[in-house]
Amino acid sequence: SEDHAQIRSGKPKTYYDGVVRIPGLGEAPERCRDLKPVGFCDHGHTVLGRSSCGTRYCPDHWRDWIEDAVISAVARLAAYRQARDGAERRLVHAVASPPQDRRYSARSLWDARSEAYEAFEAAGVRGGVTVAHPYRTNDRGEAIFRAAAESGDLEEGTGRWRFLRETADGWDDLGRYIEAAPHYHSLAAAEDVNGEAAPDGWVVKNIRSLANFHIHDTESYRDMAASFY
Image (cartoon, rainbow, N blue to C red; front, side, top):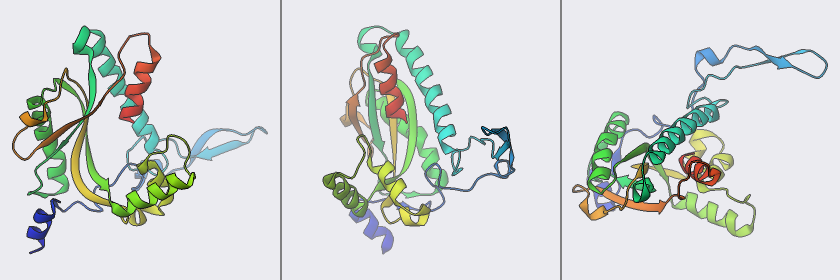
């Protein structure tokens, strides 16, 4: 059957394709659609625009939503690290992938975040900020990104998702380059991450350690903000 084929291939059966979208690739809410005065031009004429709704799916204002989330997360993480000493200040970027033999709806994708917290804790993570990622880039997406990188057409620092977002013509086109694969990223406090201690079916990996934290060192804040963004 199709379900068994997906289990054998190592990919979970999902029911949220096209329902759960990445930020900025959805519909603007009704409150965002009215034109309002937002400023004046050099000649003194009123400029009309849509005031920011600050919602994650809005094509115009998703970056405002992300900026608010980044500022909040960095403030909380910095406060935690300032209150700790030595190795307890260490912050890691870790990823937890759930069992692949389940069926995932949009609701179960978000609900499994609670299980991700438990998996991280079992692996030695004390706490942090965890974000659900519904998709990964597929082979086609990896191939065109690699080709662009090898040709020298990418701006420095451009990652796969930024490249694909800017290349694709809307959500349906982006769907050619990604596949549903629930997993959970966390910026979290951990002296060490032991993936072998994760619950059965869960895979927990430490991607990297973040910059050492000092309250007056802007680099440690930049590292947290860039990673979370």
